[in-house]
Length: 132
Image 1: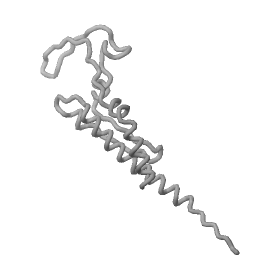
Image 2 (image 1 turned 45 degrees about the vertical axis):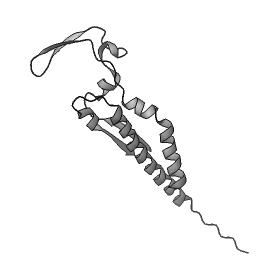
Image 3 (image 1 turned 135 degrees about the horizontal axis):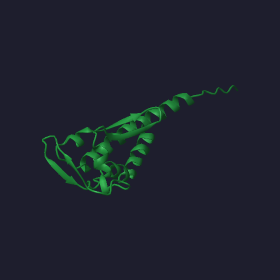
Image 4 (image 1 turned 90 degrees about the horizontal axis):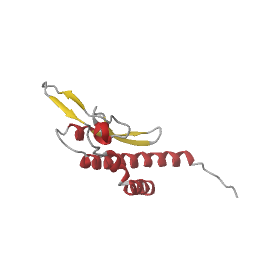
């Protein structure tokens, strides 16, 4: 009796990686949705700038914004940011008006979008790995 072994390990690894990448895309879309819901809105620019990107090499998904003030909204400024400027300051806006401020309180939208739904993200990955 001849026994023939067939090595399908490369195909299995490829299928697992593809399932993981699909799961990360789903997680990214879901986390982006939650971040947009939690994001404070003035003009809508910050909310509209929130997006996600899957890094296939790591593999990981990143959710964030390329808005220049995104970190200031998320983390706060001045006395409201740990290690931030403890004293108030004045600044002039684009219209020439002067303003006094001691900073702005943090209005987190990215961290809670990631942390508060971790179980849901884990379930997305598990489901995709089982069914994908």
